[in-house]
Image (tube, rainbow, N blue to C red):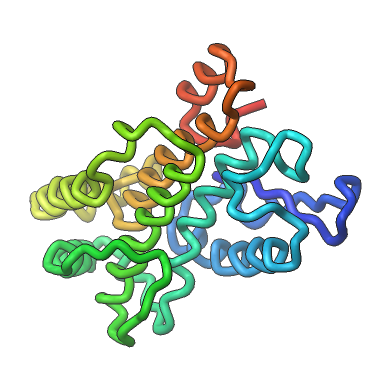
Length: 234
């Protein structure tokens, strides 16, 4: 899982490792609970000018301006919309029995291009709004750093296709049992939360690569593309 660094002051020496909030979690409900704590802490640091925000604008000399931090913080900036949903019902994102309901509602919903969202108060609709906002944020960051446009072409359409395949997966007999087995094996079944996390991870990687600019050596790019998560980078 992700590894986040925090600061209580303006000096790098005061950086606090808060990885314990997320490290090693495999249960999606526990992951969401930890995310609820991590997001406001990160946004508070950004609001107070401790960290350059958005992360894609950081330079190598900035606090947490390395490729790993930019990748993981860009992903976090996108995922922040999920804890922002005013009436939380996380079972829609992680309960096997409710995945068809959530996926169907998402696919019925009209896509939007906003990163500043107006929630409706209807939780299942608001999660759809949050998912689109997360993907739009990544599109926005990709534009800021001049990321490869082919990597961001049709982002919303591509994720809808992923959700269509997930709907088919959950419609098969024994899907709930297969989900349980995958979680026990520390793998990720196509729960809506995990699908969004994976998409944000992949797109945030492209943003971090583009943000590196001229410093992005072939070895660096190869290492980032070979990693499934920023915590794998050294």
